Length: 511
Image (cartoon, rainbow, N blue to C red; front, side, top):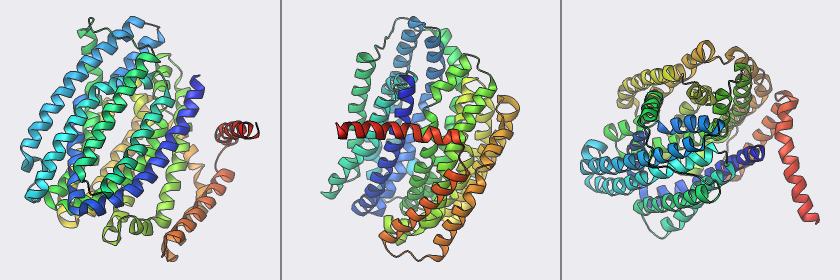
């Protein structure tokens, strides 16, 4: 059952990511056109402010996975019920705190959103802040049930819920925008989805997983142990939020809503880009914790780390080179010539994220081993350097400046320093990791040349030309990487579930 859940979850993850990305690519230009650059910029500015409210989780989500896995592996049903009760109580209190803090922020909008916004833009920001704050508060207690589904490895249901949020939600918003509704309607729709999905997840936990909850056994000793574990996780979450959201805050204060709008387009593309790695590796989170709890040797953990990293590298390089080939005309067709700076900004964000993205399974390995302190300190330094670089670069070069200010410290800290730590202290075989990644590079040379030729020398003047040359690049990439890059075992991992799916489909068709 677990193997089927894992394979089906992997397929659904990428299907959801693909369809969600396609829908969002359609949805974003409609949103910009209907709202206007100003209101879209305000909406984009409120999002990172609200995302900072998620810091009130204090990293406890990782503690839930760690301690629930420990109880589950020892078949301690009382411990699991006690943990569920503790987390529901804690997250309900934290959700209430989020609601209070969000309302306070909305009460002082000039401090939160800067002085560059007009009064009309500020009024919109305040209304959005109230709605999104309530959505964030609702998500806090619900997240306990979502974590329970994940730690029990019920990926099919979990990914179907993610599919609904990433695909169905925008599809419902599009007609609302077409009939003239504004950004507040979008926020209310997200709130409705949060409530409905929360109810479904709670029902699934009780009806299917037979989730038990004990509210009377609040264990303060266990809470202190979790707090020691999550303290460093929390620092890591804080600096992650700073690194990827501070640019929009700075632009809002220094340049105004239109610069935020342009940067958010590139940032949105970067979110899709990183999701292609995290979507796959997230499925292995419970397995990593199980391996550590069961004292599996570092070689087996390294094998998983390398195998996942190679697949992530293949996908990320394909997307990066594809963006080099047809990304510039894509941005023009997608959001208009006035936003072409988003192409350069996106590239500046893509490139430094490759290294940490193909190793993001290492984050869970650190947490499972309770050795995530160094990462948190490193990321804290990265965020400080990011801010110090981004402020003058934002003043001088606007959106491109803050992208450069983010790219440099992310590459050095999140990439290079973390590799040293993985190898020396975590026990991961980093030299072998890079040898196996390097073995893929020869198969990517000709596709890279094709991408550059298309990007530089082919004048793409229509959407159909963009699709055609994009397809040509993907075909070249797949042929060369498949034949000269992947191992027979990796090919088998890809083809086996595809053959089974095609076989079952043919059986149904042929009766």
